[in-house]
Length: 265
Image (tube, rainbow, N blue to C red; front, side):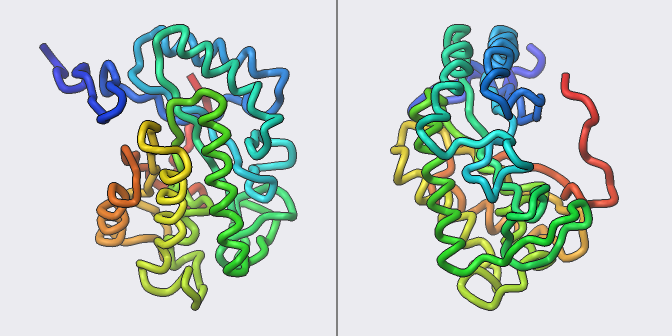
C-alpha cells in the first residue's frame, strides 16, 4: 500500500491517533466572536469526518496583550470556555481529535498594548511593542499555562504552543528581536528559556495524558534569525520539557519570501 506510514496509527503513549494526517492551524475568521463558534464547530466536524488523525485550530491568544487585534480570539477566563466546547463536542462526535493552538502574537500584534522581548517595532505593524521586565515575562508564561488549562477544561485533546513564524516565543529565540542581557537573552539557553518554561509548566499543569505540540521555526528566512544548529538544539530539549510532538513552521511573516496562503480551504 502506498503511504503505509502516513495511514498507520500513531501511538502517543496515552492516546492513539488513527493515522499521521494532521490538519494544521489556519485562521478561518470564525475564532473571534462567540456567535460564530457554531459555524467553527461545523467546519471542524466536517474535517474530522473526512478522517484527519488530528486537527489544530487557528491561533487563540492567552491574554489581551497577546491577541492579534482587539477582540480577536482569546481564552483567558472560564467565561470563554463554553464556546470552545461546541467545537470539541462536534469533533469528538465524529470520532476526531483536536488541539487548540495558543498564539501570543508579540510584536506582530496590531494594537498599542503589544509586548515583546525588546522594544523593536515589526515592519508589518504600526505599533511599537513594550519590552517586558523579567517579572513581565513570567506573567506571560503563567498566561500560557492558564490558557492550556482552560483548553483542557473545554475538552480539547491538547494544545499547540506557537513558537514559530516570528511571533512572541520566536521573538525570544532569535537575536534579531531579542537584545536582552538578562536571563531571557544573550546565549541560546537563555533565549530558549521562555519556550522551554512554557512547555515545562504547561505539562506540569495539564498532566501526562494531554497532547502538547510545540511549533518550532525550522527556517526563519530573516537576517538575525535562528541558525540550523540552534533549531536542532531547541528541538532536542523539547521532549524533556514535556512536548508530545514537534511541528515545524517556516518563514517569519515579515520575511521577503511569501509564506502565507491567501485562502483557507
